[in-house]
Amino acid sequence: MNITVIGAGYVGLVTGACFAELGNHVTCVDINKERIDLLKTGVLPIYEPGLDTLVVTNIEAGRLEFATTLNELTVEPRIIFIAVGTPSDETGSADMRYVLEAARNIGATLKNDCIIVDKSTVPVGMADQVKYCIQQELDRRGISIVFDVVSNPEFLREGAAINDFMQPDRIILGHTSEHAKAIMLELYTPILRSNPEKIYFMNVKDAEMTKYAANAMLATKISFMNEMSVLCERLGVDIENVRIGIGSDSRIGSSFIFPGCGYGGSCFPKDVKALIKIAEENNIDPVVLRAVEERNYQQKFILPNKARQLFGDDLSDIKIGVWGLSFKPGTDDMREASSLVLLQQLIAHRATVQAYDPVSMPMAKHILPPEWFHSGRIILSEHQYDAVKEVDALILVTEWKPFCYPDLALMKKLMRRYIVLDGRNQYDPQHMKEAEFEYYGIGRGQ
Image (cartoon, rainbow, N blue to C red; front, side, top):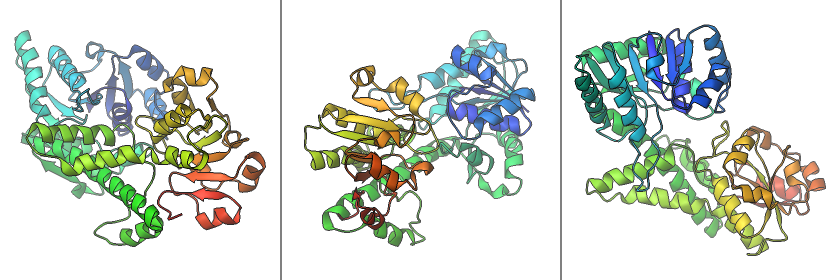
């Protein structure tokens, strides 16, 4: 099947590469020429385990191509995916300019009957706007083409995206015609061969809402546990025992109830904001969603506040080691990462920071303020143990696997003071105490 994917970012690139791997001919289109030029040579703009191999293999097989405009397509697509960004605008609403621009470009270039698929996370009713924009362009050209607009939201976890695509928990498809349903079912049949019950058909607006509701629910679980961790710490209760206790309840489950220093990334923060805005625009008071967002905001200050409680407000003589900069392990994505708040607060209080991340160091160099580097307030270390040399404390932000079992004996030789602030409750307090470390977790009741 001939497929075009508009947008060669995280969602678009994973979608395109995976469909190509299934034997389809895929062209990923992105207006960023530098990105497309790199992709043509097999160089990826993002880090996602296994994706580089998938892209290169399918380029070499002739199944995956890249272009900067729809006019460059070498074959007419049967399906066009819109997988462009939908960032928050200044009001908190999802910014739809890139989706609508893609729709207008489709209408201006479409030559054959086609299925248009919204893969981007879009507000309820956006499929109607996409359809309207495409039809406007077709009318302007004076041609008649039959097309359907389908909602097929993505549920890809950064760091596990290829597995999530190839072995999904579910595939949501919102459609308005049996023809579109049949084409999309044909497309996904190879993935669903062993689990055909994992595809759910519904109307388009239901599918659009499902994506927002799913992300908001997961964010709610995280914020709830983070709020419980604050209360547990105040009461001398260990949140980890509470987590195990409630996670064993099948009605609650163990997923997304790990307390920490706040969630980040490209999805949860912007989607919660967008859903809040949608509710407000429809005269609904989003009490729960506002609380989710507020708790996450406050949670990101827990680690820098703990550092100030230990060392005082003036940190000019304090050196802090930081392990982990990405918002989660398995990605170089630092959007809305808790590390950004931590670094800003530490540097604002004049601390010196030595940071290390296995993957996102190039991203950090790109997005962190240049003056932080020029002033020497932050140093990006080449090795994880370089980040703890002569530090007064180590702060763990991202639970990368290499940080799971640190060499505590080596750390004691390198660190000035043996203090660890664990933002993900990765370490056992008793074990750290026996190793003569002063340990502070999240909600551990110390």
